[in-house]
Length: 385
Image 1 (cartoon, rainbow, N blue to C red):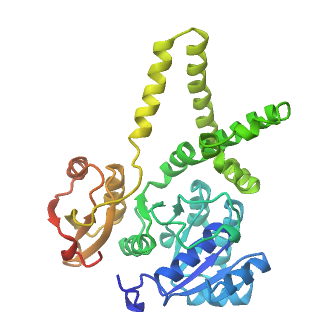
Image 2: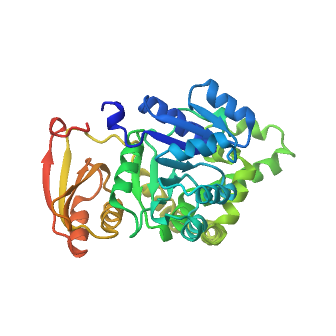
Image 3: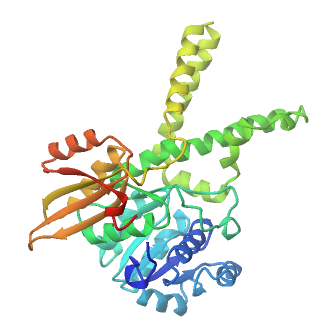
């Protein structure tokens, strides 16, 4: 794909927060789109200096500074990449400055921010919540790297008010960094990430608590903690302050997940207490089969692409509806285009890789009232490959 400025989904991007995610985003954007203008902001002066020295941003200053305000005024995309508890203040700055461009974020919870955005932003339809499912045990800009998002899932949460073009531009930007977009309903996001991200973090922290208690009595114990134990507990090294903020922001969903985990652990404990070998084997088998079903890596075949064409009324929320259905079927959208036929009608064209259940996608789209057509597409026919 060419990185010429006219092909960039955004030409001027402002990133508030230059920690692990924000700085990695700046680095990835600089690598993928060399011509993009990148402006950063962070409350830590040294962090700003490091980002400038590494060439990841063109300017870097405090969020409330005139430097960043002027950068925002010229930007067509603003990314809020601060911790959850600081994101609201950035949204309020953007509202105060009457920023007219697209706004997205990288926060790991959505309910509160989406509510704030709806209440205070002068153009709330321009806010498309986002969440890159990527991280590192090394916190801050020191852990940032341009390949952090390659192969990672990046959640986008459009809704009925999201202009279709906003989603397609963000989709192009994210996939251009090597990430895979999943469209989720905003109301489903926090519950979903609690199960696959937040609860696992607290389970890893619990394992470290367990090992630490016994290590005080047996100093050789930690020397035995190799392989699987290190893999299982790696995420426990994350920032306590950051995870405390996430936990309280998503407390109901996390508590529900932890309560369910307690019930599941009790099943293992009860099987042992009752000498139930068959029951224990069944639990272990279910877990093993589910784990083996996870893809080892995302390696779609660029020779096995599928074009899905969906005639549609040019109405509110249609792109959000279709992309959410595609994500639910496990289908990865390589690219998305909207061909406007008349003022009120268009054709939505999706290019899918060889992931997911195309049959389920077709059935779900038809049940939702869409007519669809599928056609195989070679990599040579698809200009984005």
